[in-house]
Image (cartoon, rainbow, N blue to C red; front, side, top):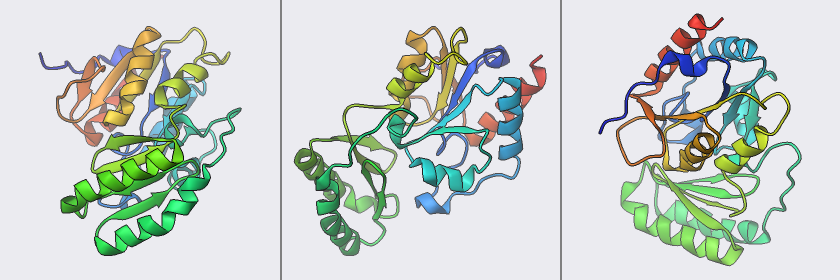
Length: 241
């Protein structure tokens, strides 16, 4: 059965968690080629004020990368699939740096493949080289095995990251903070990498909204695309007390 559109009342008095790529900005061929709508920052700032600061962008990107696009400090950011947040320190596996020359060579052999370095992992993007999917899959699996990490498939990307953390564990940890306690969590995301977050908010009595095409998901509502997310957030914000 198709997922229904989310009621605007979900935003009332919630703790709002938002994915970035594919949710707040349209996915681009390369991570540095995204376009941020001029209306996005004012929208997020207004939402954060009405929610008394209970708005967090939870992204697979590094926190520093997100900060290039979302500068205002009042917009809280959790990066690297939940691994970059206050009070959490994870050592960068040495095998990551040892594997980078091989990954750069892969990038050279397959034009269009992009290697995105992150504080605790690396992403192999093949959106501009779809024929290299299996090569990228093999490289990701080999690196993950050597580094004792996991492969997290996404939309035209394989991410290699530590196994002990994801968007769901990050959201669950944030919901224990005094500012968030007593509020129902709402998470909006688009990718398979957001499913841990969807499951976490629903386990906490909240709701999850999938962005994009219908698929098997832990989300209970759906919006068509980034433009619909912006419109829904803006309209729901205007209805908030």
